[in-house]
Image (cartoon, rainbow, N blue to C red; front, side, top):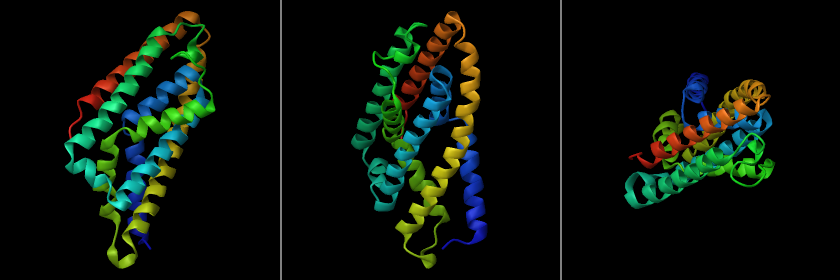
Length: 208
């Protein structure tokens, strides 16, 4: 379906984009440091599930709605900003003893996975980015465009899992060192709160 050179170029670009600092990988780093590498990996899977949603939106043309409708774009981005602000509030409230319960409830695998999905799906800029990025590597002569976009989306997701998974393991090791000290735990929580708040502001101020 794809020329080898096209696949190589797309895969390389996907890996570089995953490594480049952005809201998603910063979110994974923060969660891994605060709650451990396993939570970071589960959040990564949630984020990648969100990428499946965005890929489907591009394949079906739904992503164009966020590019053309200010209302749809703003509703989704403010929902995402509000969620991040909620996470920031929970992190600021958490003490050393309640590090794993920031936000008032234990963060089990299901909630960590859902957190990743919400974080990704409520960012309309991801859909718009996919709408601009994925079609560049398609060729109508090589098969149905929705299928090509779906395959490219899966490759991008695989690159994301590889890079974000590595970030989770590294950040988890660093976080383990911090969690040995109650004072360091509190500082880590405050830093996480500031990061969540910064991401919320960044998303709220985003323009199409």
